Image (cartoon, one colour):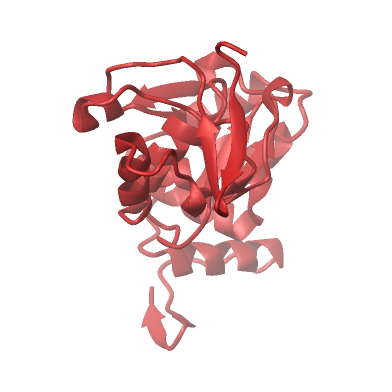
Length: 239
């Protein structure tokens, strides 16, 4: 009723009556239409549509056929609850660390009180998400650099998480000291030691993701390599 969201099916395509939240920043500026959300939608992100011919529906369809960043924008603006945020590898992508594949799902973290999904095209994580861990850039809600590193340390294998941290530290997005402080401020919370462990294995001088992964695997096996070394992976050599 009134402002409540309602969803129904029309001819096999999910249609939705979104809530009344509207804004003019970001998406609205680029499309000339009010910003609308469909956070109660359960289905495929690529199937999202409004009434036939609706300009917002057409805008979403065009964004979903576009870049990874445009998919993040569509997810943030149309699908996620207000308190959720783009997170993990997707947040790293938005920070300029583009190690995820264009075809990978968009990663999202949402508080327990705002659980939603499943939604095809999204990988949804549920957990504590204070507003100080969120940034809004170009109309997209994403996690801060430090929180992104925290999530990567929780969700990825140690070698993969450290590979991300190596790049983020090398680019000045975070530092070892700031990440260690971030983890220690959350001592006692599930996962804080995972971030500390990942930080202890970082080497911002690494010249490739393959080098980072190989170095960490060696360290975990008790064979910490010294100095530059070559890695053969995926049919090619890298440092």
